[in-house]
Amino acid sequence: MANLWDTDRVRARESTNAIERIYITMRHLFIRGFYKPMGVSGKTLRESLLTLRPEIYGTIAEDKVELNGLLYVLERLPKGIESCTYINLTSNEGYAQSHFQPIIPPKRRRNCYRIDEEQMNIEITRGRSEIYDILTHLTFMFIESHKIMNNVLVSDSGSVTRDWEKLKEAVKQKELDHKERDIAITHVANILGRTFSEVLEVYDQFATHNDPDRFIRFIYDLGKLALDEEVKNEKRIITFSPVLRERLGHHIHGEMWANTIKQKLVDHDLFRRDIHIISANMHSVMNTLFAPQVFSKECKAKGILHVYQQLAEPGNDKMREKITHHALENGMYFLEDASGTNINVQVFDLNKCTGLEQSFDIGKKKNLPVLIVMDYAFGEQAYETMEELLKPFFTDDEKEYMPVGSISIMGKAGILKGVKGDIMIPDAHLFEGTADNYPFHNELKVSDFEGHDLQVLSGAMMSVLGTSLQNRDILHFFHHSSWNVIGLEMEGAHYQKAIQASGKLRGNIKPNVKVRYAYYASDNPLQSGSTLASGGLGVTGVKPTYLITEKILQQILNS
Image (cartoon, rainbow, N blue to C red):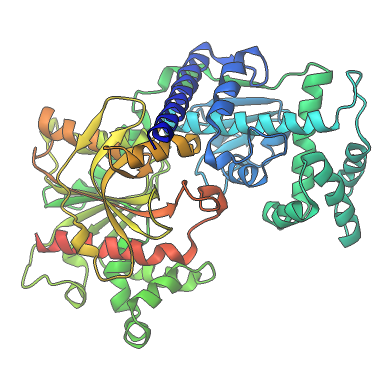
């Protein structure tokens, strides 16, 4: 048993060292201004990622091409990037005023622009975590592209296999019939080192409405650029614009974002009211406050949880529009982001929210608080946005402090013991790769969620440098060691760092401001088939989302 534990510790240490090398290398490349991912300058990044073997990238260290991992990164990178030789990471430099149409990845809110056939520009407005996220995904994608190249290149002269020639012919066709598709899948399966059934299983997941055969075009484009690198020495290049390198870390977007919120509060005479900040999504607080009134008949007939599940289903736009319209007429203000943070905000004046007594025990209170609900931040961006939001606001040359009563953070996280939909109530955040740890008193308790057929865990959360970099060895060590880590996410330590500094050091808020942290499990990276690459939560996340939201609102209204 001791030898097994020692082996696990060695693997965890190797993995930790690999993560540190990845981030040191990324910072060096960023300062340098450019690099070639599959050249000498990208070698350390590639080798470290192969040593780490993150769970989300599956078979990255094997000869066969990883399909679910490619689908995962494809949903977080701009469409068409697989065929671009030049990838330029920029700040917000005015491309919105150009004729270029923004390309927004399905699972990441970032503006990207296809400059020409060879170049893709990606706007970075969410800090270093966004750069790390993109570079990690690109490195993985390029490693997979060279697997394709190795499987089809016959000689140094550029001769390729018959499978590649047949794939090339299939790609030239606008649309394939069933027989032609099966033939193409047969050749692609040989190229990828996968079975016909494995390729068939993911084929439709890559498809779009306008391009049902996107998978084979994606694989062809990946392999073609890798062949060009090997045979023609046409290396892919990633560059960082001078403006991005100058602006990064200066909180330019966060300051604009926070000032917009504070000005809105001042304009509606809300700034001096008791204010509670909630980091969550853009639907759960609104629905919890207003669904019992808007859909009272449905709630009585089938229960409030059924209404929440209906609101979460893709085809129910009219239901969502109805409740949004009601909210805007009853005390909600919506602030669509224009700063570049990609964080929208809702402000609720609860004095104007009618019917709250139906759902909450508010007694005879007349002066109810104001809620600021901010959408999810991304990694280090959580520190930037929270720190700027908690700073005092200058009106007519006077410095005014925001009367913050509490800060609540609700989010998705990976769980290390449990299944999707379970709940985690942390008592500390550990910041991966550093000696930083942030213990705190959490107003939320495990007992608050008992009796709901969900597992509820209490312990420390690990704030990771990137969810795509976690592997089984590191997670197993932290879970079974005395650190008692129950889950992993990307923002908790950054939020708490900003809260503690604003209260105990800078005096911008009360030093004993109440904090609430609760997470629901989006995946279990220690279980095969339960990582983020295995798919989303679906309706599984509805119950924990609203249980946490209801408890947060109850505590705010009863305080």
